[in-house]
Image 1 (spheres, rainbow over the protein chains, first blue to last red):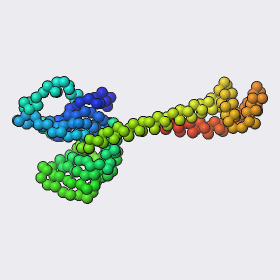
Image 2 (cartoon, rainbow over the protein chains, first blue to last red):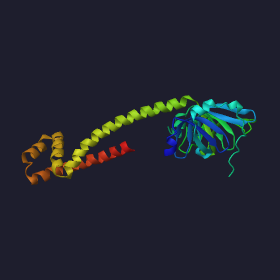
Image 3 (cartoon, rainbow over the protein chains, first blue to last red):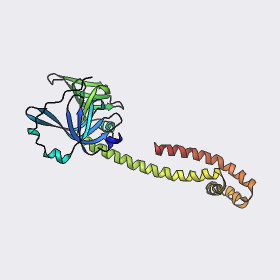
Length: 94
Length: 173
């Protein structure tokens, strides 16, 4: 918790258990790592580059959160998402 | 902002819920609880591959089956507003508590011992009745008198200090 609070109001990337990557401003967290993201979008990786899907305000359940990482805004803006080609991530299997 | 306060604020608004099994539920959020169990009204259920749709009048979704919930953008502003109003009411309450607390602090000291006693007694008796305060001021040098009068005061002090504890608890909670 204490570590996540330092990400509040910052741009973060959330990798979910089903292999999605969602980027947005971290607006809230709780003890179960439920996460509130504002102005968030999903990045869908495929052979035709990265597709960005706007999502708005999302509340992601802690169960579904695998990784939360701080995003370097400057660096992120320089990326040309259409030219980055990567395989989509696979969901977590238990 | 806590995720659950966001959800609570979202009551009465249209939300989209995706379950762990991939189904989505679009509907009006009627109710939610601390486990994120939710009640929806006028629901459209969509299958995992978005190829089948069902219309449901109302449904209950157990919180632990939820993957994520999408809420309208404006809810986040509503939460901020609510938090602000809560903060101001707490502040006001906190002030009045502090005021009360201080008063009782004197009482407590009065009950306790020595220097405090005189102060607490005086202020209290001044408030309660001239007879007593006259008592204490005229005969305050005498120990016996003092005790007698402070006994009278004790009941008061206790009662008030109990109230004070309650109030303090409230302010910390």
